[in-house]
Length: 143
Image 1: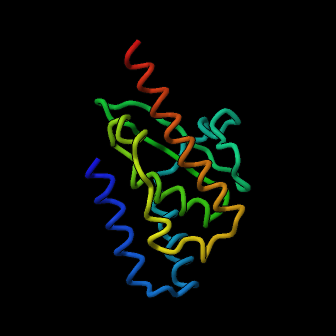
Image 2: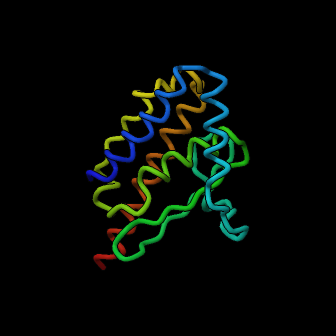
Image 3: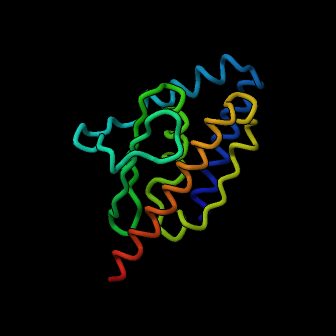
C-alpha cells in the first residue's frame, strides 16, 4: 500500500512544479498520456470500455505474479493522460492494495480546476473499474 502512496506523492510533487498554470498542466497531462504503453488493437473492444466516461477509455487487467497489470488507452489526449496517471498509481500492486487504495492525488493537484464535471465523473468511473478488476482477479485467484 505504501507504493501507491509513494506514487501519488510523486505525482503531487510533479504537478506542484507547474505552479497551477492551467495550460502547462494540461500539456503535461497530455504528455503523460503519450508515454502510456500502446493498447493492442484486439483489446479495443466494447467489453473493455469503461462505462461512465464521455471519451472512449479501454482498460484491461491481468494478474502477473500476484500483482495487477493494468493496460489502458483513450481516444482523447487529456483522458489518455488522466488514465495514465491511474495506471501509474495502481499498476503492479497486489489486488488487495488496489481495492483498498485511497486515491487522493486528484484533490491535492487541484484536478477539479482543469477538468470539468464530465471528466471528473469519468475519472471516478476509471477508479471504480480498476477496483472492480482487482476484486474479480482476487476471486479468480482464490477459485
